[in-house]
Image 1 (tube, rainbow, N blue to C red):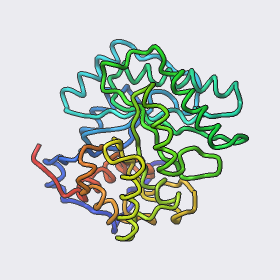
Image 2: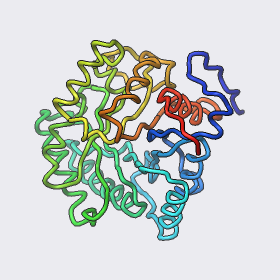
Image 3: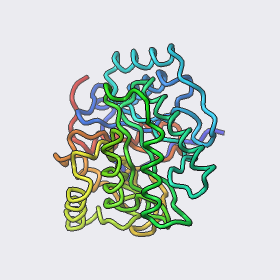
Image 4: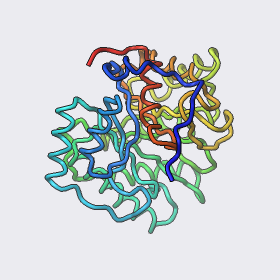
Length: 312
């Protein structure tokens, strides 16, 4: 049974006339299904007003993955060129744990991550987002070392050098034993990997909030930006996952909410989208799909908050 669209009184809603004939000058998109192929996701992104997007390149809950055919890769590249969609961001499977103390899981994770890189290169994707994983049963430093070693193994020998491809280390919600729960940990892993792989960062607003950073108050926002600059660096942040949060700051609970409907609220997203230091970044929603049209509504909310609508 299909659900009826919900009324969102506290979500920015640009007029139908504006949204149907305009596109944001910022890079704004959403995570979309690849049902029907990646090229179909590209066309759907354009149809809902996005100029960038994120996908899974295979089932996020299965180790086995299909290869990208030459026809699929060609269709994806053609659709992107036709519709000016980019960057293309791929999110790594949820099963991958690059710092697992289990040798079996880590070996499977390295092979699965290598497959993610191969598919990203075949599709011409600019970014592959990965959560470093859980180091349960080890020290954080041991986990950091294993994650770096695993990524080095996964990319070894693959032809990335003449491409814009980068692996993006994402900050996490800060759960116990989760590597990447602070900006310092993200920066540390990136520095470990720079000599061996093309790496940068992806920051998530929900993860940032629930891991304890204040991005809501004016003073908190300024302090958080200062910490990003001091650790990861503004230029290193290539993607922001734009997600409101169901849970309180510092709760460590990774529960995404629609833009403007959670504990973060609209103003921090407006502030983020107007931050000149992130003018190069893509802003991609990973918000829930509770009803038909939710992806489009969240994209249009971000576009409206950016306040930079230009004619198509």
